[in-house]
Image (cartoon, rainbow, N blue to C red):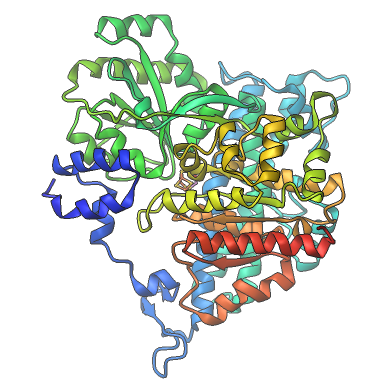
Length: 632
Ligand code: BF8
């Protein structure tokens, strides 16, 4: 703890009005959060541009492209090669994160099919059979358990596969698959591509920046069309494919008179059980005897999106809200698993009564309680966590919950979009394609990714989103981007008032918001499938690269965002990143990423920190695609 009053001007500029008042209070209470740490930590100028090399210990070397005496590292590595290797490492780490999540889901799915994971079941049999078809699993005359066992074995094998092509690759348009084969970047096995990426970027291996980026593409494709898609699809089979529902967002969803449990992280395997345990009669009566009126579950980050989409559980906030949620003093337990969990949480929690509970063997914190998830007795683990939270309720001190909460509508899986626009009896992307062709909707843009405290959080996202919908662009959103949009009131049908006349007309006819919440970050795979279905429906080109569409992550910070961006670029999409871009230290590599790569994959990167400028670039891309298709 320290005196934070000098940070107040920063936080006043950094957030929404309600947050600002709340932040001022907790800063004066001397709780240190990310907003203060970011001010004290200036980014390393070499690291931020990608020209610091730590691949060996002759350095670390910091090179300056074009300099007379510092243009190479000790081994002779040049700036574009060093920056490409750094970029490849980020893609490998991001792919590993999404895919290890996918692996856990696949292993649980197989265990459940074999009857070894009590409480887990198959909720979406249609999707089970659809996936069986993709993985060439016989369904005729077999019950769902037999199908699920063979499917589960084949999905788990995708991770360790050495040769051939990942099964989901065949969901991409034919033309795209052929392009990937020509470039030699069809992913063979998920783990293989990640390991090979790490090999190539170690000292003295791949030194051709274009070759490094090509393998980064292959690795990223193993994420989007592999690990992430496996996570999305099997979670849908086990927990249900999302359909639209209304819920609430903001720190105001925490309840003063209830036991509050925040679920934070990414894998919904245990959270599904915690949601059930919170309805357990015995635990509810225990909560009442502790003086609480009930048990309230709320989410942070991508797990929040998962349990929101399937159960309507409210969202307390996005990545940057994790410490703020604790600072309400109203959280009995924060339950975390993997990814995007700040190491500061136990320190912040010490100022209050909150117990931080880690649940993954892969992600422990020295000062947190560890209650490991286990598939064989997941419900018991969930009950134990809820019980601990209840027992912590009487330890509360002062409570300071900002009052705001807003409505949102979430649950737009690619199947839902199909039904919503095409009707239950002729579910199809035809109406969406027709509305793009006739110009009511000019195109589709994915606005995804994180919050970054280096920019004004939320402001960048939402300024951009408002500009896009005002220009008749339908926005698809996931991850913390979706939570931002919800916090700005953009995920309700009434937000159609902010849209241009064409998009507004479509939204009003269907009753949908102009910004569609499609899920967590692994659910960006839903956008890949939606794009492929738009192509298959006809009239908007033969490949994803021809569709009037683009993507962006205006406040990105995670390596996962880099992997996502690269799989969209490799799938033919222009992707805009805000904040900084991790190759800017090399003009040679950046020229390739921002231009020449398009000749190979049909997609490309752009970097633009200003939200209105970024919106302009995205709109121009969409209009450019329309022109190429001969559309008005
Ligand atoms: O995977 S958007 S801050 S929570 S990395 Fe993390 Fe970024 Fe949020 Fe989910 Ni995605």
